[in-house]
Length: 81
Image 1 (cartoon, rainbow, N blue to C red):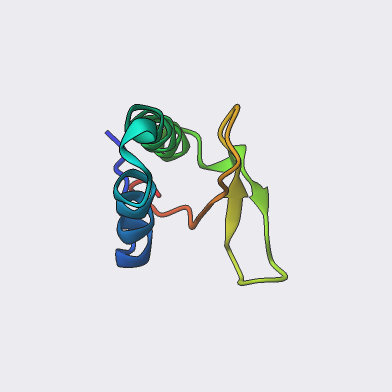
Image 2: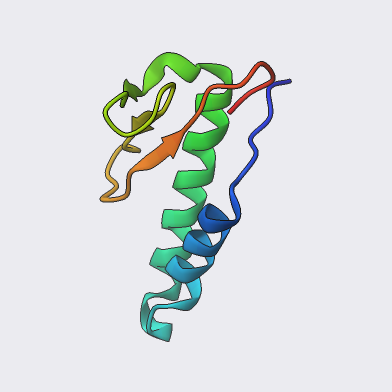
């Protein structure tokens, strides 16, 4: 099974989404994180779904989950992303 490895900065970003919002929006923030994590798992299975971003770094790709305003930047790896 392909795996997803998160950079420390990506982990911090996900925590900021959930913990950096007002309590009344917590449920929506948690759903946003669930969608991002699900998109990452999908990218691990299909790493070519995203757009190549060679202008930023060789091998870097980006993907915007459906209905999201967040962009996932990732590198395809031999065993996932």
